[in-house]
Amino acid sequence: MPLIVWIIIFCLLGGLLSVLAAALFLVLRESVRNHFLPHLVSFATGALLGAAFLGLLPHALASVNSSDTHVIPMAVLLGLLGFFVLEKLVLWRHCHADHCEVHAPDQKSRNHSTGAMILIGDSLHNFLDGILIAAAFLTDLHLGIVTSLAVAAHEIPQEVGDFAVLLHSGFTRSRAFLYNVLTSLTTVLGGVLSYFALQPMQAALPYILAVAASSFIYIAVADLIPTLHQRVEGKAALGQVLLIAAGILLIYSTHSTLH
Image (cartoon, rainbow, N blue to C red):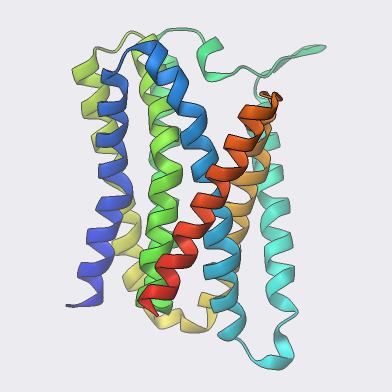
């Protein structure tokens, strides 16, 4: 099967199916959703870290000259700093005069402008996911599959949150679902455009994989893990560790089986 077909299929799996899973998840009662969402976040954390350290970084290191391997850790470091600065710029927009407040999704004003901001941000995020998936497939078919699984694991809890923001912003369930489906298709757009743009740039793929790894690490460490620390009781902590390990094990077993 042509590589472009693999990229399109797995971009759809990473984008569209995560929206469908989120939509089905939101059909459940709010109490049930609140119970399971932290478990999804724990599992996604493990999947992201597993894909970064067991999939993307080894392939990036293997793709460069042995004397230039130090540039891959440097690319990861620069990627982490870049994502930190980007997030700071986003948070900075919420600062007003001498008072700066960071608004969580359920604290944002419930209006259509908030919904539009969520949709724009989600579209850009999904477009970048498509670029990461395409870069992984152009390096190795198995790596592309593993990367797509990690993207899907991360996207499901995020789509649940985005869907909830749209509903709180006044969107009906049908409109929120439709707009989420449309934004998920930007994953395919990013993947297809990257397939044609990255093929002549094979030498740049190791560095793209390194930045992709840094994005997975940053999301897991800066965004997901802090939410897990909000629950400090022993039973919850043990469950988090087990689910993170399960996410890592899924990536490890999938990568080992495919190879």
